[in-house]
Image 1 (cartoon, helix red, strand yellow):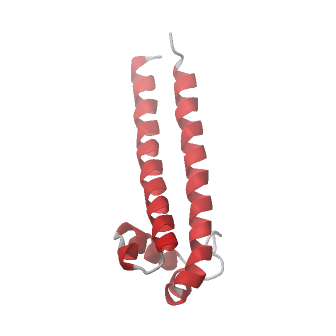
Image 2 (tube, rainbow, N blue to C red):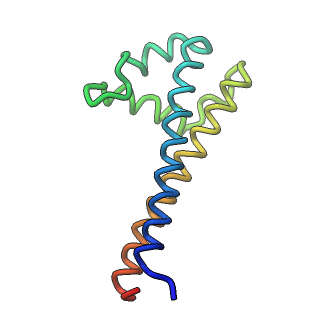
Length: 112
């Protein structure tokens, strides 16, 4: 029989690994953005994007840019591919987080 703690731990570890991949891809995207679209880079990055003092409105702007797929008409194919990867990893992290919540409730209510 499967132990509920093992299932929760496994889903959590997969979520953490995927979230780390998402953050590193986001950092790489910001580096690419500096050269691919300097105007957008200035609008979304204040030099402290990944710090608690980071401007949330700038972070939301980048999220909206990626969520709305505004990058689709960009001339740099490598930049478009990186945006697609970041978008995919964010969606995967969101789904895994939902899966973790469902797993927590399933284990709690089934008594595994």
